[in-house]
Image (cartoon, rainbow, N blue to C red; front, side):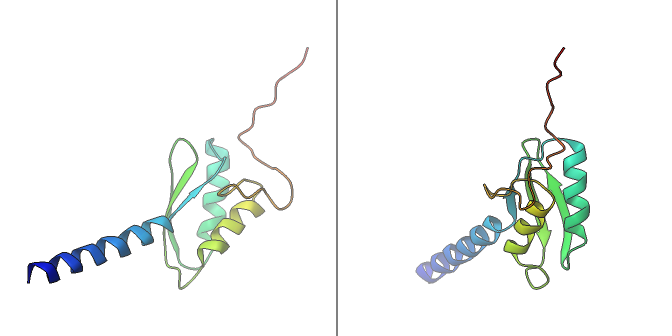
Length: 104
């Protein structure tokens, strides 16, 4: 009986870990303007309920993969002009978070 319980707990832990792997995306959006842009666009997608950024640009998502796939989320971020999980932007880098050095 203990072994059955242990197997059940390990199975649940594995499933939970896999689900968590598909709810984060690494981006280069580290400023509020960039994060707001991505948040607005992601929330337009079917099944995206919440988008939360960390200071380093990592997004944690609450979404239903029945509405939008993980790959579609990554693609939407690249369409916004930001890097997503190491994938470069499709239409050129439009990262609002870069600061340009002023020359005198």
